[in-house]
Length: 463
Image 1 (tube, rainbow, N blue to C red):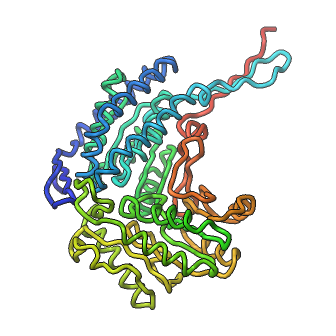
Image 2 (spheres, rainbow, N blue to C red):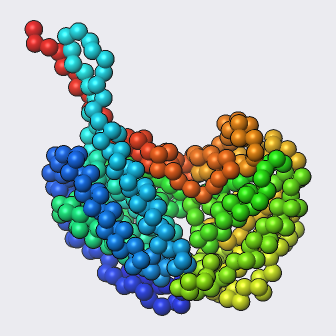
Image 3 (tube, helix red, strand yellow):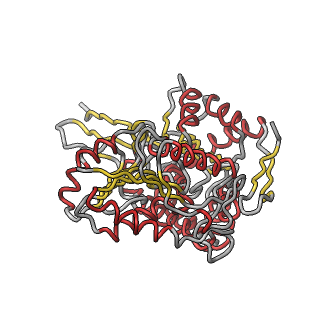
């Protein structure tokens, strides 16, 4: 195993970042420093923690343009969109900061003669966060800010594809005046990550990544009685009812499927359209997809950048080819996108019809700019197909009858349900997956509950 982390930019295959991995000694020292810092940090009044949170946001805002450029070069998101991740981070951070005092407030129970009873929320201790590369700031902020405001210390392991994001977090907290070692960034390889979880010095693991990665976390944490939060895979469906606003459905769903080159945790990965609208939906979708410009993401005119690496693009190409062999039909002429070449991370967008659930394109996570569209004859058929998945992160229904749409949502097995929207996290709502999409919860006031423990006080008056 190399002693160095090396980030290869998908833009041109160059080495963009090189960092030494933390040694075993450095990792062990970080754990001690984190625990010692946390014991002091939890005594700091919530008002001071909130103030530091606002200073953290100020740093991120001031460095938005530079952060966007770093995202672009590390993972390939078009520069015209890359800095927008900071806007999303700020929205979520503000919500979690501004609701911290209320979410962490002591719960006073109804008066009982002779007794004083209340429940406090106490920090867990050391929270270990393993962040992904596709939205390296948005996913990490979901737990970093509430964990720290709740009085925990945080050790962040950023993805080796986006290491500068962890370093930016560290710089932002230093700028905010956060005490030393309350937040630490460690560059770790897979084996060192597993070893840290097994160490017994971690109180909570928050992991975003693949299903096999989540299984590793569960194995490493077994018998250590720590909390685990897992956001794993997805195959998020959208259903267009016969009464949907077609133009709105097309614009929203296609953006949800292809933004970030389809590399979004809650991106649309399979589409079901009522037979009455199917042909129109496909026609309008194709026309919209053909307007994308596949190009170098550092070009401001590019709307579709490369995938994060060549093997990820090749995996999508393989899914598409397998579907074609089983009878699927593609609708996008890839020759319209000159940079799309085998053995390259640059991949043209693709929309397929004549698909069904015998094809991996409709059942396994694609995580790329290709999506299947399937014709259905009824709401019942659509719901059955939407539920026919090992995943359950989000699901969307497009209809002008929002009351009935909500009723359909009650029947769909998912963590978040949308009507006439998709691919968005509202920080006031809990973010949770079911089935192989994960366990645990972030965001909303419930997110704080997963980063604290209740402590009950039962006090009898003096006799």
